[in-house]
Length: 164
Image 1 (cartoon, helix red, strand yellow):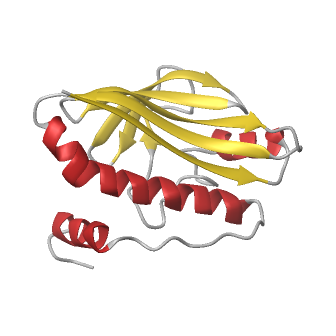
Image 2 (image 1 turned 60 degrees about the horizontal axis):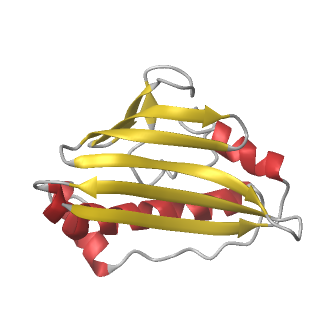
């Protein structure tokens, strides 16, 4: 078993309600947060709300808790061995800006203790950084595109059967 805590965050110079709009748009046609242009879309069996089930690509989860405009937390149901949660939240800062944070906390068990660090973690990190960049762009803020590592590019190519 491997304990995992993985946090990504971006300071956004905007109101909490505007950051909340990003969170609330998840898995909709007008999604302002999830980088579906470059990654598998986030999809659910119904609109964003507690109990909705879905995921993205091979990652499966359901919405464990949802506070509109503030936070959403997902509980993993797959792949096997992912025992924990991940989610987005908006945190107000003293200067009036807000922190958009994604936190993943889980215990990787069995095969996941190997696949998490070698495959899923690098892909997850790249995806979430792309998501935070999309958040900045959706708010009209300057953003610096983060380039994928060579390992992420190799993994994506392998997982797509050699297609770019």
